[in-house]
Image (cartoon, rainbow, N blue to C red; front, side, top):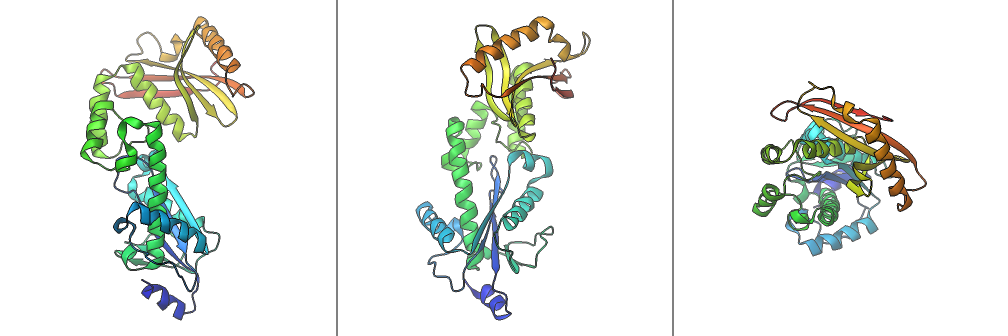
Length: 319
């Protein structure tokens, strides 16, 4: 397992990073990369391809690697990024971030599989490197355990999908859960099994609900934190409550299938605006966000007759 490292040590290179990723294939969740610089000599026993290890063994080695390594870096590309730039490009982004997050700059990087063209450091690509190089094996364990823990946390947020069991991979149960419950915000819509299910789901839900789902996904790409959806009070309902940095944002989503009677945002009348303000005032009295500045946004979405989006506008400080 130290064949490649020893060759580089003999050339005078002592800071060798292993680099690997986890999560290219799943239908949900991020892709995660790990980069590890092991010490010379390294006394960690049992380093191997993370897929060949039990969860208990991976967890044990995960802790040993963090304790013994000269440096560990983790890089993540989330679902929105995967859908925007494709899974291969997102994987390369995560791998670059993992190397950039090392505290020590490596003299050479041992990469599992194929070269990473965007990596600006000397690299050696090793097919099935996680079973041939201790450094890559360590990186694979860091990536795998980190991603698994992310998916276990997502399972608490979306319990209907059982992410803690399959970690987002296309198991029969997962596919059946998508068919039953629809698509969650962490599903990869650029992956064909998800896209097919979403198209079916889109035909079943209302135009307004579909518009709100799309808006939440869009806001997450802009780094908004979604706090609550469809908040109800004595004064009525607000579609989305979110945080934009240090601002608490109340968002009204308006959808129409035609602009015959004006753009969707025109339906947010002065009466509607005053009602939303009263909802916001009632909300902040019982909320931990009461000290934040407030903002009222309107999202305007125009669809055609088949629910294909024609126009999307986020109007900040709408009233």
